[in-house]
Length: 334
Image (cartoon, rainbow, N blue to C red; front, side):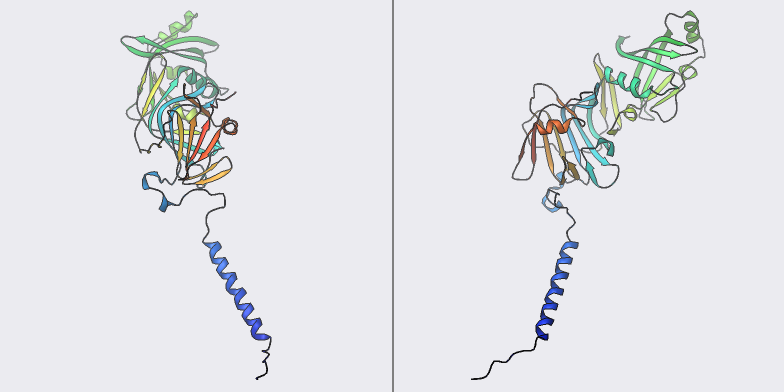
């Protein structure tokens, strides 16, 4: 019988060092190939059909009253939007001041009360403004709906006025054109004569700073309504508009079609694609469907209140990863 040979210790040391070295580099390469955070939920592009893959999130508003603040809202039968982060790739859904909504197609209605709130609260709220207390009312005049505008204009003192204007799209700029047919001062014979004097226009009477959403040329007023909305900022190309007895109805040029979700819900907000930070969870190429819990009226939604409504919602994840949220209305309190 041969005696057992005892190997020296140094070969074992070399083997252990080589094993540790290889383990380190294999782990390092694995970490370098991981570009998705732990909280990043959602399938990769290879598992998502092309019709549902978008580099940036897309939203569909179906039968929604979308609020920016109290009394400032739009109503959408169906509206498709692209949500564009102001920095980076991740859309912080909880921070409307950090992204812009680009209208891709659809139709909205803006009430005259909302337009009044925007004009008085944002458009004419700067200290040097020569207009205040603006009121807007539809009026059927000479076979068409027109806009009756009243308020106060500052000469040396504040003077009440009212006028009738047509509202249409300016074909060259794509802005809303408000063209005054008549303007008259109230309760002041001197200013009434001044406004009726030949050669005196609205541009002569009203001074307005550039880049604030309003351009006045002669008796024509070019209005950019989305430039005065609170956050989130909105942009879109208007195709057509019309007035009726209740609201201003705006159709948008179609830039892209966004597929509708498979659902029996009548009122919803659908968010799909891109990278989304939603309620503290990062969703990558996800599909989140916010459904109106009570569908007897429009789905009311406001970013400032949606977290509170989310805490009262029923949440369900389907087998394909789609997130369904049955949510109560979340109109703004202030």
